[in-house]
Each structure stands twice: as structure tokens, then as C-alpha cells.
Length: 324
Ligand SMILES: [Zn+2]
Image (cartoon, rainbow, N blue to C red):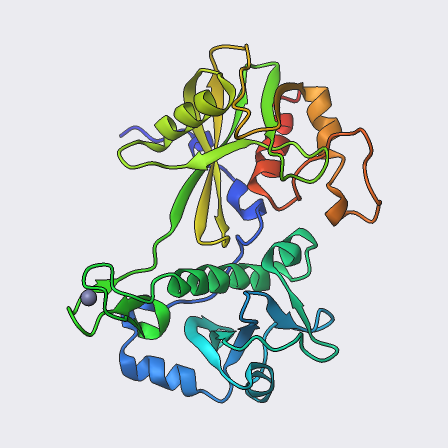
């Protein structure tokens, strides 16, 4: 019998170092009878993430994002559009609720903060940030699938949110996740980064794109890099993944081996695209965009995505892997 070499199994998962990755909610999806769901939704000890109608989380940044029942009633008045059973954590049912009204922001000390800012500023502990990712991603999907794609009838939440059912044609649909490949392409000495026009000033990141029908992830990497930068990629290697709840995406990170070096980037997609040496990458990683820093700006310099971003993970791990 031949054994796999020890280094086949990485000791530490790179995915565990990304944002939204430490969700410990137990979903019990296979055991969700309607009785169990009804009981968990009525449980007086359940804790809830309450979202504004526009998707911002309502919470006291100095406390827990999880609201007990009496607070949920206060924060969700006069009503809500969706309520989901995320699962169980620390023995109590965990819900996610989205308000349907367009009332003003909540009274002090509560704030309405968008998910991207919560993540970029690190406002939650990792387990709560992970649960927030699950909640926001699921609520986003349900919000966009209120009608049956087959017969057009209004659909209903079933199983506490693990699916939607159509009462007219009887079909069930399950929450979809959009796969995105994100990649750091290297020629050995340098790595390829780009910036979109909507990035914070000076920020560079890995190239990325949606997986299309009928292609492998490796082919997505090669196609996207060629389309966006003009660089031809050969071998591709998986590195890490990251749940990304904007709106309901799974980021899958890869390293790609460049077979060419002349960049001809797509100006409709990118404001710039260039090679960075290892020293330049270290410099980029030492600087963060202004929204994550107390410094007002980083004039004239380059900066990296937030620490929890899988792009920052790929960049930092390339630096670590090329240390010698
Ligand atoms: Zn239907």
C-alpha cells in the first residue's frame, strides 16, 4: 500500500484565515421537519440577527449582534419581510430577520451598518462574522427568488430557509451559490495585480471572475486572466476559499503560472494592471485602504485589500511561499 506524502495534507487551511470563514452554526438541514422548524422559530431563547430593509445589520457595536426575543420585537416593529432559521449555536436556535419597513435608523446605542463595513472594520468576532455571512447570503438569495422560475407563481420559504417551495407546480428550489475564481498569477519573480476604477485610491488586488457554464475552475482562471490582462496562464493550483455574502458567492482562490509577460489589460474592466516584485508586494501588503485605517489617505502609494479578503490571503501567502 502506498501512502500519500505528509505534505499532501496541509497543516493549516488557508481558508480559515479569510473573512466570514469561521461560521459554527449547526444547520441540521437533513433533519428539518416542519415541526422542528416551527419549534425552533417559536423558541423563546432563540437569538436573532436583525437586518434593516436595505440589508444593514441592526446592532450595538459595543455588544453582541444577536438579539434576544424582546429586542427583536422592538427592532423589527412594525414587521418583517423574511425570517429564516439559520440553525443552532451554543444550544440555542439562531434566526435571521429582515425588516420590511423603511423606518429611520434605530435609536442609540443601535446602529445600522452594512456587511461590507462590518467585515472591513472587523466589528464582530470571527464566529459571529461567519454567521453574519450565512444570514446575509441566504436573505439575499431568498429576496431574489420570490417567484417560481418554472410557472411564475409566488414561492414560500420551506424548512426554515433551506429551500423555497412552489404551491402551484410543487417544485422546490434550493439556495444557489455563485462561484467566482480569484487568482494570483506569477511568473516566478513577479505577481500580477489589477485595480478596478471603483477600488479605494491606490488599492490593487488579484484578478477575479465568475465561473461560466461548461468550464472547469482551472479554465475559468486561464480565461479570466487572458481576458482581463492579456497574460497566458498554464498550470493552476487551488489555494483557499471564502464565503462572500455580496450577494451569495463562494470565492475560490488559485495560484496561476504565467506563460507570457506582456500585459494588455481590458480598459473596460480595469483602471490598471501590472506586475509586482516580491518587495513591492510586501510594500503593498503593509498598506491598507483608507476605510480600514485611521490614516486619512495613502497619497501616491499602493495598498492591499482588507486583511480578511481572500485576495490579501493569496498575496501574503505568495510572499511567504517565495521566502528564501
Ligand atoms: Zn411553480
